Length: 312
View 1 (cartoon, rainbow, N blue to C red):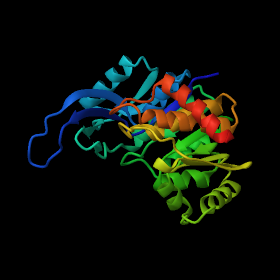
View 2 (cartoon, one colour):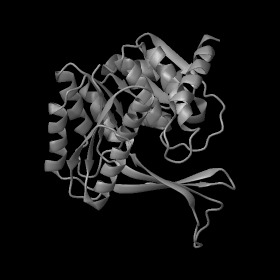
View 3 (cartoon, helix red, strand yellow):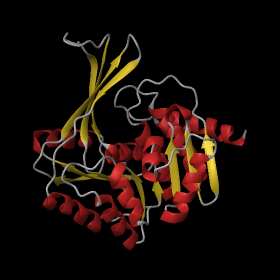
């Protein structure tokens, strides 16, 4: 099996730390600082390798901070290719307030990219060797709203498959293009995509089935935060409740879900089997502090619990 290709257009250097109390005006003294390579697709690649798969990360980066991101990726020994841009790679930061258990996350918008830069990224996808691609994260300023739709067209043309995890008009344009194997919106993102409220019992499953029938999407996974997630495909729907665990950080939970589910789909697993692995990885991610992703041992243990839950 070829490595899963991940695409990150707006990556970040993810900083994380702890503080007793976060207060305005006063200096907030932090500890346990760490920095990790981040952004949707890069996080996906980290998780794919952690749970036993192979990944290759394609990403845009620039400025002095772009070099820092490169070095962090080297620390993880993650195979990758950088597409140079003029703008500086953004730095995000999260602070865990130990006195309350609350997490504060600061996420800048990131650099603007030029047309030659985003076209170079499309060319890189064209020339890459892959059977499965995961595109995850927001579009940077300057990228056309149909960028992911253009990526989907490339993937479909070569007979490969694609998972997309994004939102807003970029998601709408890609779904309209057709050919996506899997999408993973949150509940709010799904309602924005379909223009429907889904609070009534069965409404989400009905709206999802309609989306699949008209769009060509094979697998739809809607994440519901603490309420779990819903899988919808041509065979029907499966709703899974979240396990009750002590959450240390929400950073990377969605990316972990996408990574594990996409890896098992790429391996030929059924959408339901892949969904249970996604649930396990997403849950495992909240057990680690700050910008750490899920741990393989936690994923395997939690997968067993979700299998039992699915059978009950």
